[in-house]
Image 1 (cartoon, rainbow, N blue to C red):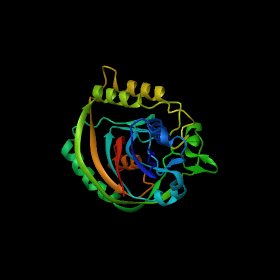
Image 2 (tube, one colour; image 1 turned 90 degrees about the vertical axis):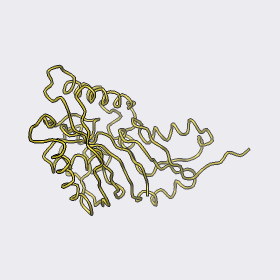
Image 3 (tube, rainbow, N blue to C red; image 1 turned 90 degrees about the horizontal axis):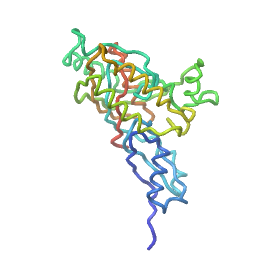
Image 4 (cartoon, helix red, strand yellow; image 1 turned 135 degrees about the horizontal axis):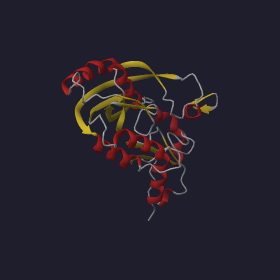
Length: 267
């Protein structure tokens, strides 16, 4: 019986996998594709999960037509910390005691988020994250970041069709650390990164985990609880959701990062 080879495949990329690892894991489970040319159209960060579009066979030649499709995501924003990657897989660059503040409570935060996310809807210019594979003068941005080199960060036009706050929850420092520890350990390395080789074959996992441990695990830690907001977004291709998470915090004057990202739909 002849095995069916599909030209277009929608994979559910797991958190911790790179797109290339997700593709290769699919090949391992489906040996009929071992000798078939395959590629993915549209990347997902290692800490992001969800729909990954895979092309097989002759369809790989049509990759360009799939790259401009709109996307939908569910994502969470952790308030109180910022990192150099705008997600949990980065070095902490700023932190702030928020949940313990008398000036900020859940209702106040909800009000400010709803007010500010309106500014994201529509066309805007978004800078590429420094930890990305966007090339400048023949070198990916992540290399400039890792080497501490100055570079003019390129920008691109994006369009956000809708951005909605779903809910806000709280988490204490112990649960937060256990959550981050478990999820970062899913990332295998050295391997391809935010793209194919975005971090030079190393995600800095051990170093990053140690930083989170130092910031969350010690007994006299003053910041006991943190806010996490869940949002949904529909946006144009090329939009970095972790940039949205970071930029939302900037508008609120609170350090923030993308705590989780799940792509739910490719339109």
